[in-house]
Amino acid sequence: MTDVWGQQVPTTMLTLTAPHKTPHGDPRPFEAVLMDIKGAWDKARRVIRRELEGIKHEYLAVYEPHASGYPHLHVVIFGVARPSLGD
Image (cartoon, rainbow, N blue to C red):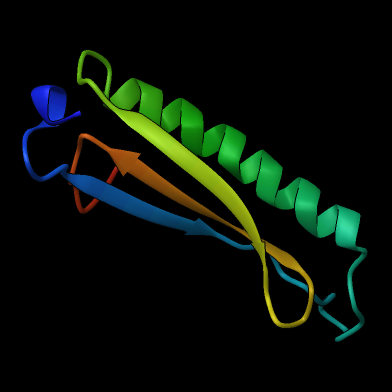
């Protein structure tokens, strides 16, 4: 991989979460939280593709549970190090 990226690979990291509770403090269904995160990731991917068009990059996305059991999503974008992607 060093022939493509060099010794150090520039990276950008994202973490996507969704509210685990309703405005009244009740727990939200697990599936609703997961679908919110998936929807946010779909939108983020479109922005990433648009912003990085023509720039070689790869990404890795991994769901991970909080201590509460609810998920969040970690994304590492290899090949670009930017403080902001899109709006």
